[in-house]
Image (cartoon, rainbow, N blue to C red; front, side, top):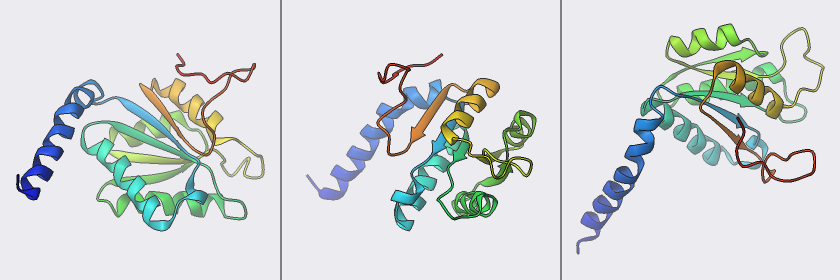
Length: 166
């Protein structure tokens, strides 16, 4: 079989497999805790941004909550990540602090909110982006939360990986 035809068939197969998920998650909020920036190259980070934009383009409502590399300005990093998303053809806006009303407003106006957990009132306070992502997921009624980081999962008090949270 022609290699080009094989490639087309492979892509069609992937799309067919994805259709039920696309349907099930249409207009659903997905919170993405992005804690892996320091381990990604620039090319890998841009591919991740393209994947987030793909989620939006198939009807999901992504929210990005990010960690900031040590020594970097949290607010400047927030703007940088929003800009990377915008370079992929969507509207994105940086939000400082967990402000559910603003997050909802941005989602309703077709933006991808990019959130650093700190705001001007607590910029020197260490706030784990994982905790902020969980708080945002609960307050927005998110369907899914994705944790992208070096850890192998969220653990309970006894150290067991939690596979599902409600």
